[in-house]
Amino acid sequence: MPKTIVVPEGTQKPIAPYSPGTLANGVLYVSGTLPFDKNNDVVHVGDAAAQTRHVLETIKSVIETAGGTMEDVTMNHIFLTDWSNYQAINKVYAEYFPGDKPARYCVLCGLVKPDALVEIATVAHIGK
Image (cartoon, rainbow, N blue to C red; front, side, top):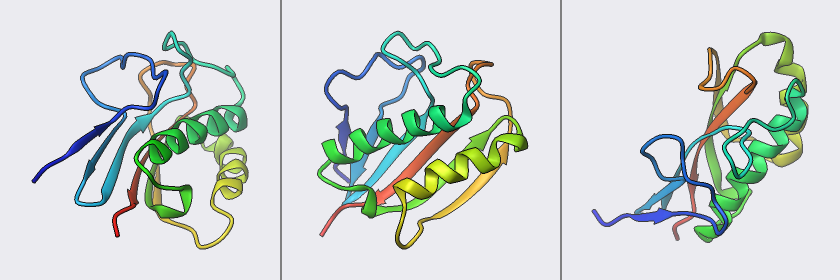
């Protein structure tokens, strides 16, 4: 099965061996995305809503680079470090998915960098 690695222009070097996205047979898999700046430092420390917006904008750039839109998202895997941030994350999340919502799950866990409050991995079907 042929696959295409998807890397938006200006993407920082990943902190581990992965690609921002992989497109195969019209399905785009977006790697777990953290609220990192160009130096892989956490942005918006302590602000779950701002971190979520940053993560979703990063995911959006991967999807658009692959030729899709956020409406093509079919599944999100959400990882958060504290349930007290759940409402703030959901409020921003709802802005990015105003119509029919993709399937998803949320898991409480530790993340790679302690200041990161949220990580999201995404699947989008952008094929014809």
